[in-house]
Image 1: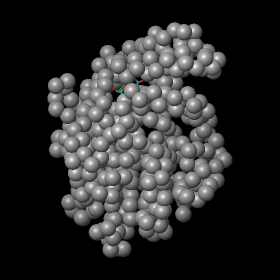
Image 2: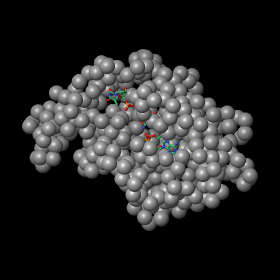
Image 3: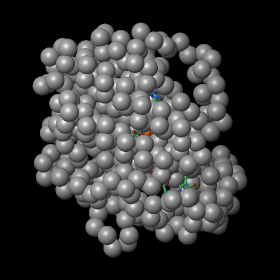
Image 4: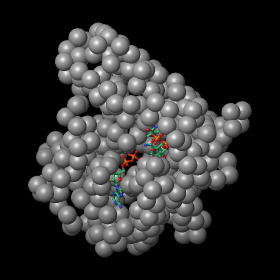
Amino acid sequence: MQSVLITGGAGFIGQNLVHAWRAAQPADRLTIVDAMTYAANVRSLEPLIADRSIEFVKGDIGDAALMQRLFDEHKFSRVAHLAAESHVDRSISDPEAFLQTNVLGTFTLLKTALDFWRAAAMLDTARFLHVSTDEVYGSLGPADPAFTESSPYRPNSPYAASKASSDHLVRAFVATYGMPALITNCSNNYGPYQHPEKLIPLMIIHALEGKPLPVYGDGSNVRDWLHVSDHCDALMNVIERGRTGETYNVGGGNERNNRDVVGLICDTIDAAFASDTRLAARFPTCPAAAAGSCRTLITYVTDRPGHDHRYAIDATKLATELGSRCKVDFERGLKQTVQWYLDHETWWRDVTSGAYKAWIDKNYGFRRAV
Ligand code: NAD
Ligand code: TDX
C-alpha cells in the first residue's frame, strides 16, 4: 500500500491516471492536488471523492506551505507530477503562467518532497515521477531519426522551454541531492476528457457544430499520437519499475500529419451520422446532418509561430527495460474518442461555455487547504 500524490489530477491525463491507478492499485491512498485552472474538470472524479476513495485538494503546487502540510499529513511515498500549463498556443500569447507553474511550481514540489523524504529517511524507497513532453527535444525534419532519451534539448515554444527547465531541475535534484526521481517524455495524447483547445477535441466539436476546422499552415506538421490509456499504463509501470535518475520516452508509434488526422476525424463523424440517424437532430448544423461531409469545413489558417514540424518517439528503452508497449491502434482509438465526445455533450458544452468553472468556483465545497 502506497500513499500517492497526483498533481494536476483534474486535468486530461490526470483524470485518466486517477481512474487507472484506482483500478490497478485499489489499496493505495490517492490524494489529488489541482489548482482548478480553466483546464481542470473534476466531474469524473466526483464519485471517487464522494465515496472517499480519493482525497481532492484544491491548491497550487507553488504554495510551499500547502505542499509541506500535505506531505506531513499524508506521508507520500509516490508523487506523479502532472500539474502544468499545457497548451502551446497559450504559452505564445501569455507565457508567464508557464514559468510560474511549470518551472517554479515544479521546483517547490521537488524541494518539499526532497526535504520530507530526507527527514523521514525515505529517499531509498520513495519515487517522484515527473511527466514531461517530447517537445523539449525540438523539431524533426521528415527523414530524421525519432527522438531518443539522449537527444539534445532544443525547445522552441515558451511551453516547451518551461517543460525543459523543469526536466533540468529534476535532473539536477537527482545528481545533486540524490532525489529518487524519474522523467517521462511522451508524445501527443488523445482520448476522453481532453480539453477542447487541443487539436483532436477541437476538430470534433467544431465539426459537430458546423464551424470551420482551422488547420495551421499547410497541415503537413507531424505528431505521434498516443492514446491516454497507453500513456497511463506506461506511467504506472515507470514509477514502480523504472530506474531512478532515468528518463523514459513514451510514444504511440502513430505518426500522422495534421491534414490526415483532421480528415480522419471528418470521415469518422460522417460515418457516425450515417449509422445513427438521431445525430442529425442533435447536431443540425453539422454537414453530416444533411448527408454532406465534414471535410468541407477544413480551413487552412495562419501558422503557429515557431511551429515544430515533426515529433517522433523512439520508445525502445521503455519496451525493452520495462515491457511497456502501446496497445491502442490509432484508427480504433480515434473512433472511440469521437464516440466519447458524442456521448459526453454536456461535459464539453460546460467546458466550452465556461459554466463549469464559474459553477465550481461558486458552489463546490472542496477543502481549499489542509
Ligand atoms: P491539462 O492542461 O489538461 O491539465 C493540467 C492540470 O494541471 C489542470 O487540471 C490544471 O488545473 C492543473 N494545474 C495547472 N497549474 C497548476 C498549479 N499551479 N498547481 C496545481 N495544479 C495546476 O494537461 P494534460 O494534457 O493533462 O497534461 C498533463 C501533463 O502531461 C503536463 O505536465 C503536460 O506537460 C504533460 N504532457 C501532456 C501531453 C498531452 O498531449 N496532453 C503530452 C506530453 C506531456
Ligand atoms: O486549431 C488547431 N489547429 C492546428 O492545426 C490546433 C489547436 C492545433 N493545430 C496543430 C498544431 C500541432 O501541429 O495540431 C497539432 C497539435 O496541436 P495541439 O493539440 O495544440 O498539440 P501540440 O502543440 O502538439 O502539443 C501537445 O502535445 C505535447 C500538448 O498540448 C502538449 O501539452 C504536449 O506536451
